[in-house]
Amino acid sequence: MSDIQTLQPKRLWQWFDRLCTIPRPSHHEEKVAQFIVDWAKEKGFFVERDQIGNVLIRKPASKGMENRQKVALQAHMDMVPQANEGSTHDFLTDPILPYVDGEWVKAKGTTLGSDNGIGLASALAVLDADDLAHPELEVLCTMTEEAGMDGAHHLKTNWLQSDVMINTDTEENGEIYIGCAGGEDAKVSLPIQREKNTFAHTYQLSLKGLRGGHSGSEINTNRVNAIKLFARFLANIEQTQAFSFALVEIRGGSVRNAIPREAHAIVCVNDENALKTAVQNFQHLLQDELAIAEPNATLTAQLIEKAEMIFDKVSTHKAIHLVNALPNGVNRYSDVVDGVVETSSSIGVLKTEDDAVTGLILIRSLVESGKQYVASLLSSLTSLCGATVTLSGNYPGWQPHPDTDILRLTQRIYAEILGVEPTIKVIHAGLECGLIKQAYPAMEIVSFGPTIENAHSPDEKVHIPAVQIYWALLTKVLANIPEQK
Image (tube, rainbow, N blue to C red):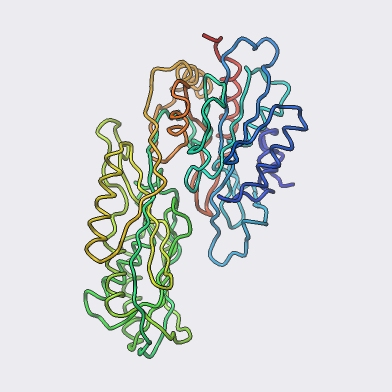
């Protein structure tokens, strides 16, 4: 039990605190899913899991609300597992440790899981309550949203009965989302050749201290990708022929949908002083160029035990310049929605394997042709250096429909709570709504949630006053759902 249990709305925070005790990183949601199923059975609710593991719970309408439209509340069960460098936290066994810091709830050294744990907690809190007015409810808890939207991809048709859905995965107070980007994963693989090390010294290079963040909603915020910045450093050394070196390993990031905060390489050199000078010069560049965007970025070099095998000269050259040239960041802004990113890409993970360097890239776009264009860029680039690119996990965007009853209702009640009109937006991040609309095209959907900052990073935090507003909005919308058509 943590101190967040005393926060208001108490029922929601108690549920979130309980969820923090159950490990639920992507691909490992079985414990939390079984917990939810067992609880729903104890409450006497209808509960069922589908073939992929999604959980569906149904609750009858409160008294006097039986003739209202049926509503589904939707949240995903998994969270992004990110910990600070040096942390011993095991996301498969250890609980998240939330704490209150002023007006925010944070976690000790890890991601908090408020994305989408607050939404999931709110849906369970509504089910748990016996003093709320609401129509007949369904709660859909989906699997593995953060690592491919597996649950939404495999959602059965004719399973849900609701007329309306409220997605709870939005992260900004005062905003209602009615559309989002689609996405696709790209795996770039460069074959490498190794040879015996003839260099005198081996160094571990580490770039740390970057802010990281959500590679969709924060892709346009000047947050620097550590993998790309590190490749820039290595490419500069090679291009200027400052000194000879070879790679042993290059890596960075840990999840495909977060902006990497750290990158590392093991390099072999003869001239130690030249390497140290290059590191110092790049550190000065970081301080001058990124003093505002990335004030804590640091590059260090540490002498380690001599490596036996290294990349050969050609493999070192190709690996550095391929990563340096990868398209990353905003590709194009929307012509339709002012200020919204239309297409972007972000390399989230870079690894060195026995015979290849591989990178995981998430392509996002509001339009299918945007994803296809970035995929074409990657294909052209990789073909020039003997690498390959493999596409997978394509999911559609959620096309905006601004003329719906649920949007008008949510907008009216939000304005009453806030005292100002909410903003209607399309988000560049991926939501499951596009896939859900494929299975249920007649369903009206809106998405809203409380303010969450720095999602997908250990700096993640959720704003306590915004959670109070979110709960008031959610419960008032449910209490005012119109009659069935």
